[in-house]
Length: 543
Image (cartoon, rainbow, N blue to C red):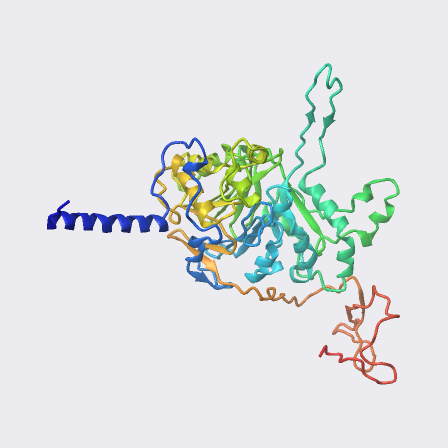
């Protein structure tokens, strides 16, 4: 075929344009996907990387400890994963800190699943800023690191640990009846499975730890527990849990003072149990209309946290809505697609929700492929896929359903964040196509929608939302422990002595008490630094 020069020029230009477009398609998510897929092939496989999350990698960095701007709500994802465990992502936890435009600074932990405390430490977030923990439900991937926060937080916190969470499920279930095969069906429930019961059992289980570390200071005189209920507008009295055995016959020992935590001590756990059935219906109180789902409302900081029921595995899971300085964050945690989160998002005073954090699950085929180390998704009817389908059906929001939910929110959230999701370029690429199939005006990741990843930071103001990647050290230490001038002597104490072995007295003439690290141990086999004859075994200063 003999081509004229103009034909060659046209073909060359078209070829260059096609190559450029093909390269761009390998770098960017597709602009739009419409219609429903008949099988996984429409959404997966993909040429994207399975071992990196490029969007997060390319975010600008932020140094931990960077001060908040006036009027800033800072949201940090310290955990973002669904079980099973994954090295790149810890389980769920979201930390929220607000600046002082509308009042005093304030801080909140939403869920604290296994492994997240390492990220809190890397971010320089100390235990003194982890005193209010809001649990969405009592699955291990949402509350396991509460053990770590409770056990190692007291010297820094020196005030009780407040755990907000849902009340008991009250679920009763009876087996299906059959006259021949199951004529006497069993009934299960209700169980004492609420947040207060969980905290009670946790406190009892950790007794050895709390006593072992009680040679350290865990309270200070300036903390007044009597003002907390009013200051925070709590829905119940802030009462520390008691040993569960105290209520039974023979439980006199567990009612004695040394078994009861003082209401100002950091080893006190105070559950704030929330009626999970409440969704914000107003009721009259004098001349005012009061919402029935307020968990926390600080008179100092101006933060209000409300709760609402979601659908996850079992009755009793809740989501949270945080409002401050004219801005709103919603965190649904784990849930099937349900309408309460839509009501919360659409009922926002005519303003869009600033940050809408909602869980998303990978399709059962992709989940089975990843768990099984396969190269391609197995058939939908494979037993392993169907097993994971039951998990999705009982508990979670599929990718496409996430897109549908966004399409039902008006005005659209300023930023929607998908969480509880195993991110990588391939899974996010697949998920974005599913979202776009139901919400096609979302063009790409970043402006309206992003997938959470550990150490992702959102700096939210009324003017803009900026995203960052926290630049942390894998070898850093914990945040510095605050100092308190009016510390109360620890439980295990001794008289403070001067260099001559004489007691030390304070200005009021009272002998001073000090920590006794030897009170609970047998020193008969201990090797001392210096022997009685003066010979040295090792240096007292540790070197």
